[in-house]
Image (tube, rainbow, N blue to C red):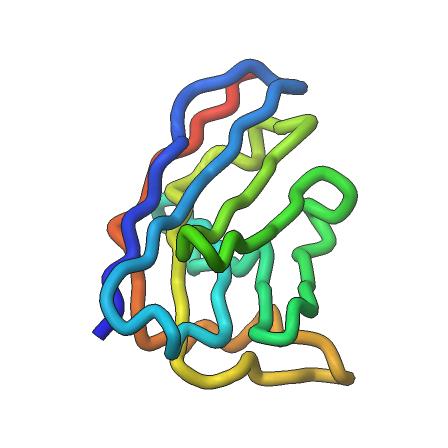
Amino acid sequence: QVTLQESGGGSVRAGGSLKLACAASGSTSISRCMAWVRQTPGSEREAVAVLDGDGSTNYADSVKGRFTVSKDNTKNTLTLQMNALKPEDSAMYYCASDRWGCTLINGRPSMVHLDYRYWGQGTQVTVSS
């Protein structure tokens, strides 16, 4: 069993930055594929950044060049550095993980497979114009 707890959300003006953190506890050694997924009311969940167990990453086109996902294995923490934030980045951001490696599409971690086994409660990000 893995428990995920997000932190770092908040309100920021457009162009600003936020850093989200996801602290993993429990059987963290089995968290191979980890992701940040966001959702706005009335919309489906969207993966924004995925990190596989071998360190490979993938990003949604809308955040490439602005967001960076990383993992500190010593602290069992997944982070998402978000720069140049836009109002359309406003959403609830969830941390998710699975015991298996990420599903690959064309050799890259999939951005469309969202059937992660473990989910955090989410942290709200609001970007004002």
